[in-house]
Amino acid sequence: MLIRTRRGWEIPESAATPEALAFGRRAALAGAAAMALPSIARAEDVPAARNPRYVAGRAITGERDATTYNNYYEFGTDKGIFRPAQKLPLRPWTVKVDGLVDSPMEFGIDDLLKTMPIEERVYRLRCVEAWSMVVPWSGFPLSALLAKVGVKPEAKFVRFETAALPAVMPGLRQSWYPWPYVEACTVEEAGNELSFLVTGAYGKPLLPQNGAPIRFHQPWKYGFKAGKSLARISLVAERPKTFWEAIQPQEYGFWANINPEVPHPRWSQASERVLGTGDRVPTQLFNGYGEFVAGLYTNLQRERLWT
Image 1 (cartoon, rainbow, N blue to C red):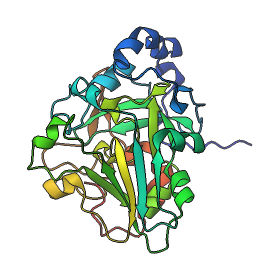
Image 2: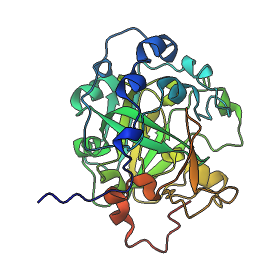
Image 3: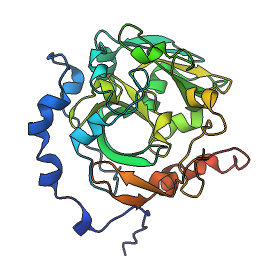
Image 4: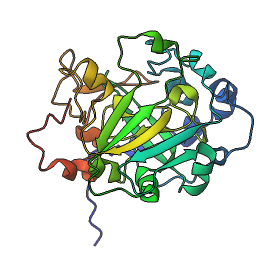
C-alpha cells in the first residue's frame, strides 16, 4: 500500500497555472529580460534539467515580474534597480573560496560551471518585506563547491561576500552602510541539500539585477540572506556579523528563518503578497521546507532563530 505523507504546501492540481500560460510569454519577454547580457556562448546558456524533488506548490512567477522587482542596494534602494544594474560587468568574473579549507581556490565563473553538477530547481523566495515569488533557478548545490575545496573540522560558518565595484554600483556611495554586503550561514546549513548557488533563472543566464553571475539561495530563510554577485566565499570559525544584522540587529538577526508566527518589529509576517498576482496568501513555517531543514535547529531553541 502506498502511503503518502502530505508536506503542507500542496495545492490541488486544478489551482495550478497551466503550463502554457506560465511559460508561453518567455519568447516575448526575452529581449527585455536579457537586455544587457553579452551574446557569447557560456556553460549556463545550456538549459539545465529540472530536478523534480523540489516542488514549490505554487505557480511560477512571471519572468518579467521576477526580473524587474528587485532588492540590490549596491545599485539603489528602490525596486527598479534592474536598469542601473545592467552596468555590472559579468565577465571576467572570479570567485575566491578561502579560509578554513584544505585547498583555497579562485575560480573563473565559466571554469567553475564546467565542473559543477548544474540543474534547475523551482524554489520559493520569501522576502522579509512580506512579498514572495517562485522562480526556476539553475545552478548547483553549495555542498558540491565545498567538497571541491575541502572543509577543515574547525570551520563552523560560511561567509558570503558580494562584489563591491564603485565604478558601476552607485549605492556604495552611501557610506553609512557597512559595505561590502556580507551574509553567512552555519556549515551545517551550508551542507543541507536545499542550499543552492544560483547561476541562472528561467532557463537563461542569471541577470545582473538578480545577482549575476552567481548568487546564493536558501529557500527556508528570508531573502536578504541570499548574497548576490558573489566574489568571495570563506570558511571561518567565528560567526560573521552580517550586513543587516550590523545595521539593525533588533530587526534582522543572523538566522532569519521564516516563521509566520514571529512578526517583524514593524509588520506582521503571517501572510505574504505574491508577486505578479497580488494575491495575499498565508506564510508557512520555514517557507514550506520544514521537512528538509527543521532538524537543523533542534538544539538551538535558545537562539533567535526567526528574525
